[in-house]
Image 1 (tube, one colour):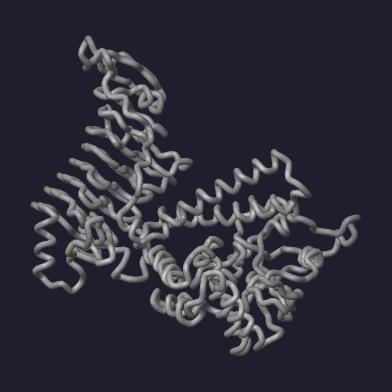
Image 2: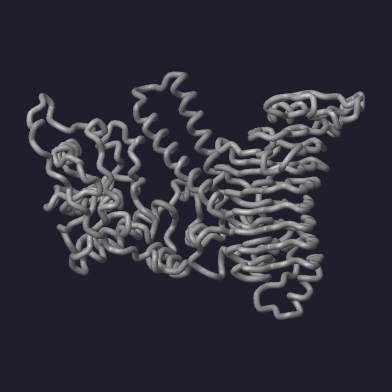
Length: 593
């Protein structure tokens, strides 16, 4: 399988060349700068030259359909999942027969060379090597090749010692994984074909192949590979927002790492396992199975299109206190008497400097008054009570910041939650800045500074936003799922969907994104939607493959159905728009599939 140093299609050529990518490392960061005993310590080390350019990406120039044709029609050719490894290996070995020796850049993990590799800001150590390919009797894409340091000595690290490289290669018997080597430009067409084949195989193992694929039926395996290619394309062109894509990749890498960890642990058990070893194996296996199930859910396009499957809030709703009383929580870094002078004399008060503790103590009907300062609260991701969270003072000075440790920021299942006069700043979390899972959430005079996705209103939930500002979302500023309801009045939604896209027909959900079936309801008045990288308002029509229901199939307005279908769709949306301003968006209002 490809190593962690492998790039995605289209990224390889730039990573391998240029002195700007060659940071000097201090002597203390080197694993072994001189031989044991100190001999040669006074000799001046030979500085590595810059790496030559590697062959440009072949896959980067292919469209999604081109990639699907390459893998499904040309390479796999309808083979069973359990035969996919053999088919890919045979393809690669046929290309390797064309040339026995060639030059390439060996890219490997920095920890092979440096003790404190996690402190060194480089993704890989690259060295120019001469490759000798001796084909194995048993075909495998993961076999090793013989390498030796090529002249002139070249690396992406300017002061890496030549002696250190020689010692590392000697420890490895001068054999490195084939997929860690990237052929360089300036060689003949046979080497170019080898470079293309290596890139194709790396991409297959990095993104398309899973070790659970053996359970797939042969007639569905090619379709599964095609779906994974679609996911990859959606990530690249921005249809799937960058934070969500990051979570998917992170879980995929975690699965691969855990799988290797389990194999390594089992191989180190000698003889009959002890009770402790057996329990540890089962723990690792169970975690692996759970991750596998999660990744399978992600890969189902229908489920991704309709959003999250199950509620993420598992906290039980407390409701009102038995005595019917309500409490007002004062959240401030320092308490002062004037903070409560405008409250009724009989108001029950509690003071906290910790917003999380205040939220944990709340029952329905309570109020949380937040005074100027910066706060964090994990309990914002588990809001179930009907409470009012209100900032006292200038909203710019009352800032709630997300904790990157958690995927979620503000998630509500309350029947009537109100958030007023605060600034919400997303840092590192991946889900929507505010996710309304059910019930109704009311926002007034708030600033939402998104870093991940924007405000998401899930199936059947409702949202009201008044006189607020939403900015910076890597996706739509407001996303309405089927059957949801939203009222937007007097808001500014701008600079959303700020990721680069390579296809103008995708990833263009800038201001508001509406997913149809059943139709959401949206009322907009006096909003200013501007400077978004995409449409101001996007309505996503259901495609035919998303229309299956338990009772059968419903009629859908698919692409090319004509103006009548579009008009009917707009009527069913219950879309009310008046005195809104849509300006400086890449596009205006669009209905897409």
